[in-house]
Image 1 (cartoon, helix red, strand yellow):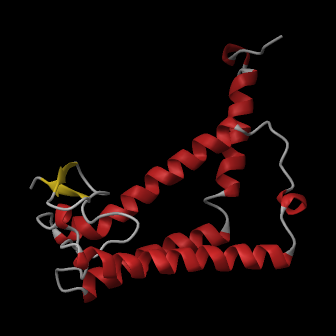
Image 2 (cartoon, rainbow, N blue to C red; image 1 turned 135 degrees about the horizontal axis):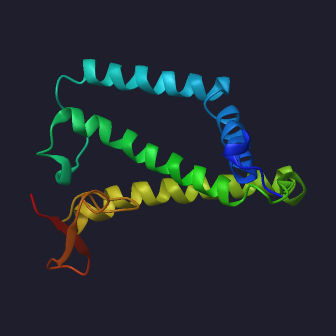
Length: 169
């Protein structure tokens, strides 16, 4: 039988949700490492705003005409979205039993080999984009072309086999 607010008691569902919210707050906002990360992020953003003198050294054509402060704050807004998605996933999976990832992990030798191969792949991709892009008459590129990750861009073909992006201003 469910107690009602009129009886001086909150409904059972409300109590469960209150317990979930308090667990979520304890696991995040009240966690010292989260507080330190938020403080450090704010300090670093302030330092960037102070030292950058109104421009950033990145080639981002889609953000070229946006105000400088917005260019600095934009990644933080993306992090807030990611944190909200993490909260949704946490809420959706709150009744599942935790998975012991340590039992599923490969041994140290295999992990080290896979990590080194992944780093080599990233290194080759980065260097390859710096070399191949200009040789084909394009900007240097890596795992994405400049202007394809921020704002709306439409693909246009150039004289070569590559597809590049063209963002409207």
